[in-house]
Length: 472
Image 1 (tube, rainbow, N blue to C red):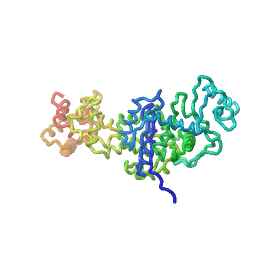
Image 2: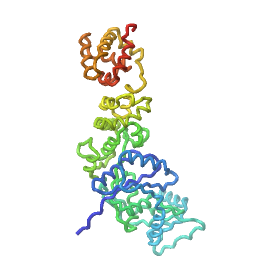
Image 3: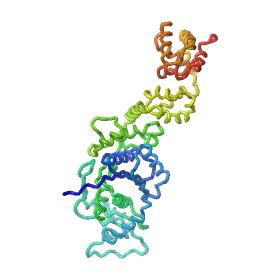
Image 4: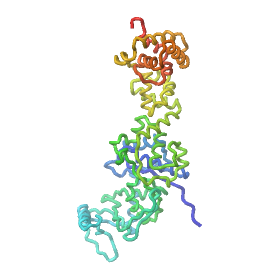
C-alpha cells in the first residue's frame, strides 16, 4: 500500500536585483495556479544572498508586481539572508558526514585546471585535488588560505528526473563538478541555499525557467546526500520577442509594473501571461478562476512562447469592455489628471461608457476623456477652412437654433440631427464632421449625439456660436 502524496507546495523564488520582469511573472503565475488547482500552498521566497546586486528597491518592485497581478502568497515573503545560521549548520553537518569537504585550491589554480581540461578536449572543471578518497594523500594546506567547501558529488551513474514540462531528462554524474557550497568567508552559494530552503519549506513542485535545467541535477544530488525528499521539477521555455529573439528591453516594456503604467489591466495580463506557454484547448480568454480550475502542467508548451503586443492589446480591450464602469472610472481618473484634465467636471461614468469599447488601454481611455474634461483645443485653421464651409455653417446655425429649447439628451439630439439633415438635404458626414470640428476641434470622435450630450448644452451652443453668429 503506497503512502498518500504530501500536499502540494510550490514556490516563486526571485532574486531582488531588478524589477519583476515578464518571465518571472509568468513563472510566479504558473506556480500560483498549480498550487491553487491542487488546493496547495504557494510560497514567496526572496533569494537575496547576492549582496552586491540585491536592493530593497528591487524587493519592493517584486512585491508590488506580485500584488498588482493578484498573486498573493500563502506563506512569505521569506528572505534567504535571514537563514544564514541554518545554512551554516547544514554545511557543518555535511562536512561531518563526509558529503562535503574543504578545498584550498585558489581561484587561479582552479582556472588553470579548467584550461588544462579544455586543452585536452574535456569539459572544463575542478579536478578534485582536495577531494578525499580512501588511500589518497591530500596536499599540505597552504598557510593562511581559507578554504571553500565543495559538495562531494557522485562520480558514477546518472541523475535523472521526469520533467513536468520537458519529459525525461538525464545528466551523467561524470559531467557534474564538485560544486562549491560555501565561500571562504562561510557564506553559502546559490544552489546550496535553494536546496536547503526547498527542503525546509517542504516544496513538492518547482516550476521555473528552463535556464535552470543545468542547476537541477546539482540540486537533486545535494538533496539526496541530505536525505531530503526531491521535488518534482518543471522547466518552462523562455519568452521570445516578436522578432524571435530573447525578450529584452529593446522589445518594449519588460517590467510588469510598466504595463500597469501603460494602462493594462491586471486581469488581462494574467490571462495573456497564462496563455504564453500554456493552453486549454483553443480558449484564448478565461477568468482567473477558470485558469485555476483548468491548470495542468502537462499542457505547458515544450517550445518557447512569443510575445505579441497586438494580442495583448486585443486581450486588454476585451477586459476593458467587460469591466465595471465605476472601477474603470476610478482607474482612469488619475491618468486624466496626469494629462492636465479635470475628471470631476464631467460625468466620468458616461465618458467611460462611451470610450470603453473603442480603447485598448486605460491610457487610451484617459486620452479620449480629455475631449470632455481637458483644456479645449479649438480646431486648426486648416480644419476650419476644410470643413466649416458656408453651407456647413448654415446647417450648424439651424442646428444651434433648434437645439437651444430641447431637452438635452442623446435621443433628442439624434432626432434633431436627422431633422437638420433632411431640411438641408445633407448626408450624415456633411453635418457630423462640421459639428465635431466646431465643438470638439477634431474630425474623429465617438457618436456625435453622444459627444454633444456629454459636453452639455451650454458648452455646445457656446462653441457653435463662434462659427454661426451673424458676424461669422
